[in-house]
Image (cartoon, rainbow, N blue to C red):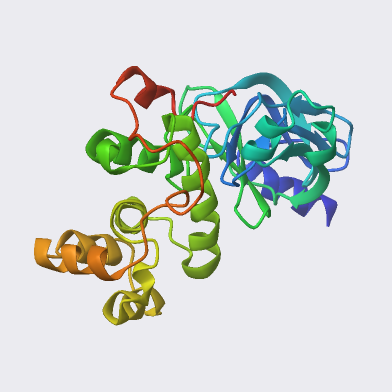
Length: 283
């Protein structure tokens, strides 16, 4: 029985340990944060005690931030992670309550024996932290572009194309924090992960009306169980200017901060350098 298990692992291109468990050598860790939380370095460990850590992670951050090089064994992993809401962390940075608004958590992750991808590039172990806080591991040889929920891409796209309509924000990072919070709600309700769909949803929410889902046609499309990736985004792109103006006129102000009593009434600035900084792996 043990020989059969070892043979199966060798068939996947894996080294095996003394107990026939998979062994991944020379691995670099990339962590993707799809939660709305700022995260301190995330710690991943296997049952044998091998440990790897990420950098600090902003909401949507992770791709391009790599730590290496590690050897992991087995199929059961533990993730220790901590962080908090970016707004609360900023608010309590100097009043002695900073640690009180942070959480500390431990999550178990099962990673079945997985075939090592071909190629000569560095072997990457990806840790994906989802909006509902469940986690998944995967192997690749790509340092970036492996994010499964395009938070950073959507932040940059909206900023480049609609920055003057994003009212109530001092800078792109503040806007990105809010978009990540909306992403959590959208993912939990509709499992939106497609880039086109994400752009369409956030365009309507942040530039048209924050309650746009009250529109019967839009709501029906979002709830349609047969909806395919990209369908919603294409439907939004096809909306006429007249329809958009009607939604603006009848809907609630767009964005999360429009109704808050705050002196921040100016649109985002025009510093293009900030665009590429949004969603960087390290905070």
